[in-house]
Structure formats: C-alpha cells, structure tokens
Amino acid sequence: MQNYKDFLDYVLIDEISLQKRIAELGAEINQDYTGQDLMLICILRGGITFMVDLMRHVTVPHVMDCMAISSYGVGARSSTGNVRVTYDLQNNIEGRNVLLVEDIVDSGHTISHVLQMLNTRNPKSLKVCALLDKEERREVIVPVHYRGFSIPNAYVFGYGLDIDEYYRNLPFIGVVDLEKYKPES
Ligand code: 5GP
Image 1 (cartoon, rainbow, N blue to C red):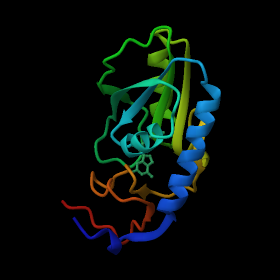
Image 2 (image 1 turned 135 degrees about the horizontal axis):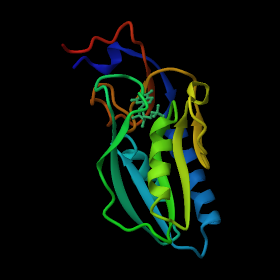
Image 3 (image 1 turned 135 degrees about the vertical axis):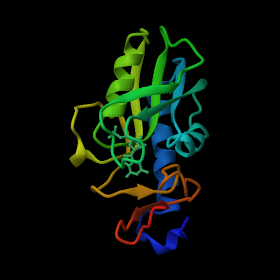
Image 4 (image 1 turned 90 degrees about the vertical axis):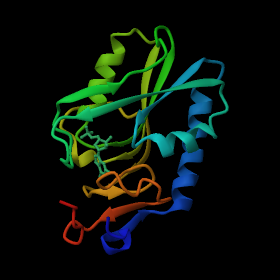
C-alpha cells in the first residue's frame, strides 16, 4: 500500500474539529434521550472509530451492538443498492430506542435498507446518526437525525473510513486524489 501522503489531496476535517463536533453530537443525544433507555448500533466497519469516540460523550445509560453490511460488487467505490447483512445484531431491539451510528451516508441505499429491515423488528424508535453526509449524492431519501458534517462529493478516508481497507486508523478525514492513488492489482 502506498503511503497515504502520496495520494492525500487535502485534509477535509482535522482531528480537533472532529472531536469537537462529536462532543456536540453526544450532548444533543444526551438531551434527546434523557430518562430513556438507549441502544447504539454501530454499522461496521466504517462506523467503529466514530462509535467509540461518540459513546464516551453519551452519558445516558445505553447498550451497544454492531451489524455489518456489504454491497454487492466488491471494490466499487459507491453503493450499488444491493445491500445485504453479513453480521447481524446480537440483541433484540423490539420496544427499544435504537440509534444507528454510521460513518457516512452517500447514495443512502445502505441506511435505507438497514432502516427497513430494523423497522420490521418493531423498535420503539429508530434514528440515524451519521458523521458525514454527502447530500448531493443522494439517490434515496433517508432521514439523518444527527449529522456531523455535510461534505462535498469526494472520496474520503481516515477516521474509520478506508481506502481499499487501509488507513482507517488516521485521526482525520482526508480527500483521496484518485489520479495519484494506485490500487494494488
Ligand atoms: P451509501 O449506501 O449511502 O451509498 O454508502 C454508504 C457506504 O459507502 C458507507 O457506509 C461507506 O462504507 C461507503 N462510502 C461512501 N462514500 C465513501 C467515501 O467517500 N469513502 C469511504 N471510505 N467509504 C465511502
């Protein structure tokens, strides 16, 4: 894998801005769910870094669970709309307040599919918290109740988001210069 500095176009959101906004989101969630039972659900794998940092600001008593989703067409840089669950929740969500924690909403297909599926399990409430939102790319209308940042139409990586599975560990969100990025064959 190339050094990310060779294909980093620019840092879109630095570490300090990310952490400040995540603390604000946590405060909003605390206010909205005061006195209520809460279940946070991390959408793996991109949402994991965000989830871990967000959870530390959520002081309302809560449980957490994870699910993994994949789109058909491995290697594609956008969702195809054919979404399937590869790892399901371990908890029953019936009658519970569920908040989905997602790295990024792009076309909206992934979150739309997850919402439809989870709604059939009769949660008391079901909301979405997305760190990043590429609104101009939307193909299906989906609610984003808590939004970290609206971002432009660019391929981003870092802070849980990958470039061919690498660099999820970076503490900032960077934009990939696709002309400089050389995928391994
Ligand atoms: P959607 O179904 O909304 O089109 O896509 C959602 C999923 O596509 C995200 O959870 C993420 O895995 C992936 N995705 C969309 N845009 C980006 C991006 O700019 N960078 C990365 N690393 N993944 C993205």
